[in-house]
Image (cartoon, rainbow, N blue to C red; front, side, top):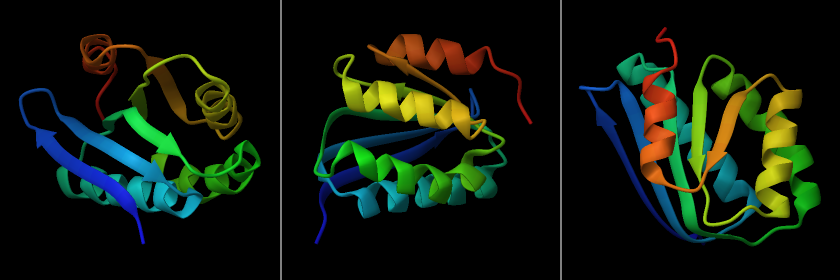
Length: 125
């Protein structure tokens, strides 16, 4: 059973899909979150995803990112992903490294406004 609170919204004024995750997540939870995000991408025709994981704890080893990234890469292939993280850490850096390997356009930010500004300046579909 997941121990994560999830909030996902679409902002029509900026064409951003915004997802906030809080709690403790397993590797399968992470895959499920990005699958939900992909459904919003399809529904709203947006390619800009802002994910706030600043209050999310990973309950899986870093090696699980090797399984997560192939699972989510097709869903995020055409997206720009801005992640709000609480600190620079090994897992966040590894996520970016693996994302780049799968040609996912992703960046980590330490604040919501920086992440949002970066996304707003990216080209739309």
